[in-house]
Image 1 (cartoon, helix red, strand yellow):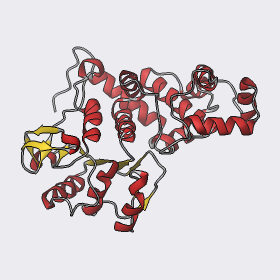
Image 2 (image 1 turned 180 degrees about the horizontal axis):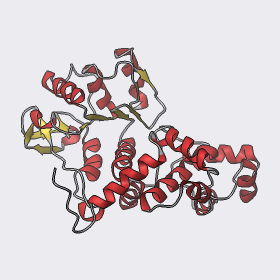
Image 3 (image 1 turned 90 degrees about the vertical axis):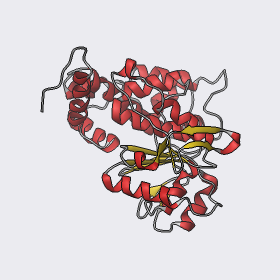
Length: 323
C-alpha cells in the first residue's frame, strides 16, 4: 500500500479490509501487506485520517502488487521517488492498482500510455486531457489492462480488489469476502459506474427474486422472453428494469453468473468440462472453453490446474518437494 500526504482515506481503508487482514486461516494462505511511504512514519491522509507507514518505498519495489489510493489531481506532480518506485516495480513484473484518482499518479509515472483505463467519472475528462495517449473509459467500474489495474471512485476499488482476489484465490474466496463485507455480490469491470437507482432494491421489487431463481437454475435456457414471463413484463420493460438495478443487460448478467458458477466447479473438483458446461447452461464444452477464455483471460483447464495446485499446497501436512 503506497501512502502519501492527502491520499484517499476511504480508498485505503476499504481495500485494506481485503488485503490487510490475514484470512489465511480461511483460505490457506493470504497476502502479506505493508504500508510504504516516501518518509516512513505517520502519514496524514485526507479527511483528517492518519496511518502508520513503517516501510520505505524500497520495500514496495519488491512487492507483487502495489496499490495507489486517490490523489488530488489539482496538486503538483506526485513525489518523484513515488513515480520511480512505480516504474521500477512495473518493469520487474508487479501489478499496479490505482483507485479513483490514483490513476493520475500512474499517468505521471508514464504508465498509462496506450492503455485503457478508468477513474472517477467526474475527473475522467481531466485524466484524458493530461494523458492523451491513454484511452479513458469514464463508465467502467474498473479495468484490468495487462498489470495496470484502475478503478473508479471509492466502492469500485472494492470491486477491483475482489477481482484481484478472484484471480489469485478463486471465485469462492471472492464471494466469501463479498458476503463478509455485506456487498451485493460480483460486479464486473464493464458494469456502469452509476445506475439510475441504488443497487439495494425497493422492498417490493420482484427482480431480485428473479435473479436468485436464475442463479439456482442456470442450466435452463433463459431468453428475454422467458425472463419477462417470470416477471409478467415485456422484454423491453425487463431490459430497462434490469439496467436500472444492475447496471448491465440481462444476457451480460447471465453470462457472468454462468462463468462464476463454472469457476466454482473448476475450483472444487474434477467434473468434466462438458458436464460443467451443461450444469451452468453454457451448453457445449467448446462454448465453455471459448466464453471462459474471453471472460477470465485463461483457459478453463489452466484455471483448474491453478486452483488444484493451490488446494494441494494448502492441504494440511503438505510439504513441497525440495528444489
